[in-house]
Image 1 (cartoon, helix red, strand yellow):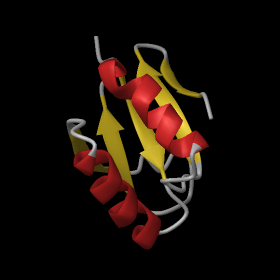
Image 2: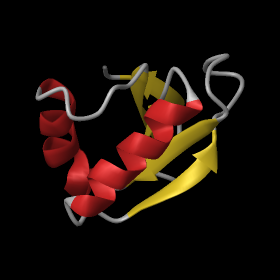
Image 3: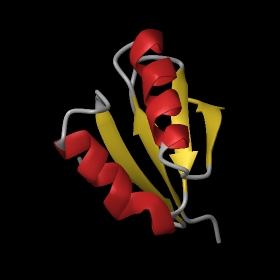
Length: 82
């Protein structure tokens, strides 16, 4: 079962800045191509595990990272949560 979260960005600049901020906070992340079937947006997304969800949501709410969408990936597919 694949279960993870991805952040989709409006542009590459926001993705690179988001990566820098999230890594700077010590959260393990990986860069992945944005699945084209969920959005036509920046081609770079950030993938992370549930353990980092609350902290990353806080970074978004504090406007420290600028995202387009946040998705949860499970066996049933992608579900937008932000």
